[in-house]
Length: 510
Ligand code: GLN
Image (cartoon, rainbow, N blue to C red; front, top):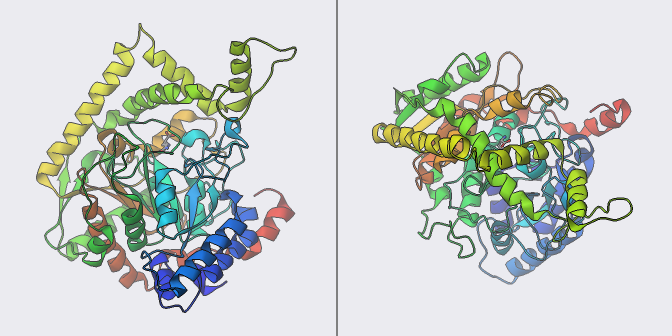
């Protein structure tokens, strides 16, 4: 395996800047890796090697000409298919958008291109980002590179798996209830949901507009910081975009220091409901931080337990409205009923054929929750709970600088295990959803492998809105301390998948 695919984005960027390697070479080794292992992992829905190599050649040309380039110029990146990309298919994992090629770039994609990063292609996801396993993709699931019969998390399983299997050093994700952080937890990668409004949602195919946030996926905290520095910032095309300038997240990682940092452990999310190995790694990480100067205190967030219930009213309500635009007229699929039909009948036939079962379930739930007779009882109550969750955060952050929780209750489960049980699937996000309800930022950092199954585990840190730099500080410090303990990055223990492609085709099962 080429060393170039194993190193971090920051290290690759340094080698590119020193002209030890060209962006064309760096891009080609990642395309080769995709060709070798993506048959087994299925992280990508679409790869555009030709365009990637052309963009890489352009960066090389500019570097040779002495142009001033950004810190990640020439580094390849994978893009979650929820973000629209000019000239590249964008499906959000749905049949209803099959074959749709957008005429413009989402703002985070535009920023990534302008910074000289090289988009390799689009990554798999649960349909319209609804799910925690990527099994709800209309194009088949993604497999966890650590164990191919296990889920890579969701909805951004493709982005996490592409980074964990060394197909890309960086990826973009979107997080509405945990879709960046939970996949990071189960794949041993780093995932960040920035403050709501930090990264533009323009061109991100909306799931729930008041919850969605685009963010970085990477193998190191510094890499996530460098990417957040590229994508964050005001965008007049998104009315919820924060106008203020942001401090450098990369600087926060480089200066990382936890002495005197007050870390609050959320009592309600430190319970028996979490797998033993998830909890033991969580507490070991906290002890390590404590030994290095952090103060660990217990805090209470009494309304967090209602987060999932509130989320599954607010999210379907917003999604049912956002998804109304897939009407057979404006985008993608159009299905004609046999013998023709009225406009309504064409729309109904198209939505029947184009949406999968989870999307239909949520649209029905959402329209019901918003219907005249039930609006106050369901949607209205959920909004009140949302306010209570926000108050829990306010009270906690009056006491501590950051909060800590395990990122998700279990390690990666097996494909199929929760597919027929929507509630079991929803419970994966018990620790991640509160941040989306309150708009605060969250990071998931790998803390090791669970002793009972040898699968990756992450710790989540949460900070007050606009204090994303605190996450990079504590995440960067923990990563450094763990690296000193381990001697090598966690992902160096992941299987080298080069031989798995063969297995996949022989067994036909994975
Ligand atoms: N798993 C959650 C859901 O199904 C979160 C999805 C997301 O963050 N996009 O809604």
